[in-house]
Image (cartoon, rainbow, N blue to C red; front, side, top):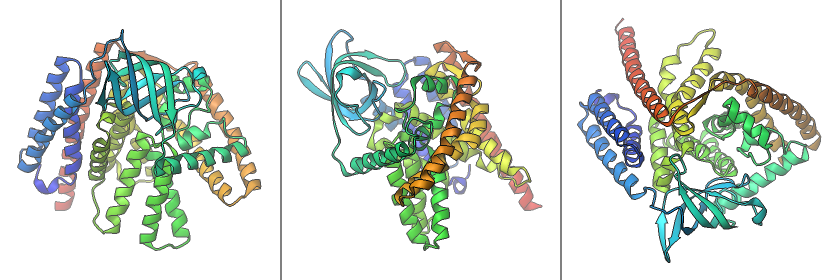
Amino acid sequence: MEPRELRYPLFVFFCSFYVGYLIATVLHLWAVAILTVLAVFTLILFFRKTLLILTVSLALILVGFLTGTLHSVPHVSSDEEYEYTGIAISDGSSGYVIAGKGYLLHEGKWKKTNTHIGILVNRSAVASVPRKGDVIWAAGKIEDNVSYPHMTMRATSFGAAVEKSLLSRIGNNMKAWIVRRFEDVGLKNSSLLPVFLGEKSFVDRNLSSAFREVGISHLFAVSGFHIGLMYLLLGMIFKLFMLPLKLRLYLMIILLGIYALSTGPSISSLRAFLVFSLHCMFALVDYPQHELNLLGLAGLVMIIADPGMLSSIAFQLSFGATAAILISAPLHKETSKLSFITEPLMVSVAAQIAVLPVIIVNFERLSLLTIPMTLLLVPVFVLPFFVGSLAITILGLINAETLSAILGEGLRVLSDVFEKTVYTISEIGPEIHFSPLSASLISSLLVCSGLAFFFGMKGIVRRTSTGDHLS
């Protein structure tokens, strides 16, 4: 690859660091050997003509390995009691909360640990449900897990204090206000809040289970789809009022930030917000960047802030799906009469294929309905849910109660149809189950096949475009 062709070095650097981190955290020696050889071989093969990129990438693999070693899971005994304090990075409404950036007390000493820990909480013994961003304290026995999070505490004592930072207050207050608007129009327990805010605490457990069985739980994690859709809708509104470009960009960053904060923020929404905000910032200084470069920069910023999130399944799913969409974009940009169908189809398929290795290796099962149901439910239900939720929020701002009630009634009916559809399909939805070894082997095979396909197709696209240019 020629130096001038590499327009996304930050993405390559991010992937190199991530691979080094994974090498340090995987448990099987054969997996370490395969991952190391694959990473080094790929870098040398495709960046051998770009000595600087190759050198930095190999160095970042080493840095990632050292980081993963330093942040490895601390040794714990399942027979002893521990105390833990940290920051909640998930909502604890289900009786289970994930925390990070914490300290572990054992034998009278507090030790810092960036490893994320899952905490099982007895909801009846807790005065208030912990929310994302809250400072928590827990005591109990800890068990090691093979999958994320790599430690689980069964808390015998638990407490939470509301985080006092300005950003947390803004996000929590905005989220509470939106929930009240939905409650006013009878949509608090509908499927709209999970779509709009990623808020699953109001969803019935049986329905949540049906979402998992059908393989569509990812639709209720605020991600690039939601932030991108918000970006497009806000852009249309700004253009309608003919606002100047720079003012539109500044407002876009602020409003997307408030929306991301109201979701927790979740890892996927934070990643999406960073990418779109960086895009706006570079547009302000008229210095456009390749989308993969922005994704790599966002990833580097996030892991500097919290290296422990590299082991998070949500982080892997978010970045894997986004990278696949951006990488596959040049392959389906040909205009045709059916492009409005083929492009969304290719985007969805690319994202779903990219996350298959993560799903298989972590959950050891795969719903065969994930891809077809995603393609069906997004345009029929999820898109109207999101647009309708944004409309209810805006109508609430201007106190248009009558219009909100009418729109809410229509969305409630649509939500009921959606839930009945999911229940029906979950009863017949086929699943494939894997053993731990077969899950690891199949995931490795999918990753290698994906890399071969990517670099092979890039070569075909490059040769095709060169031939068209010469002709």
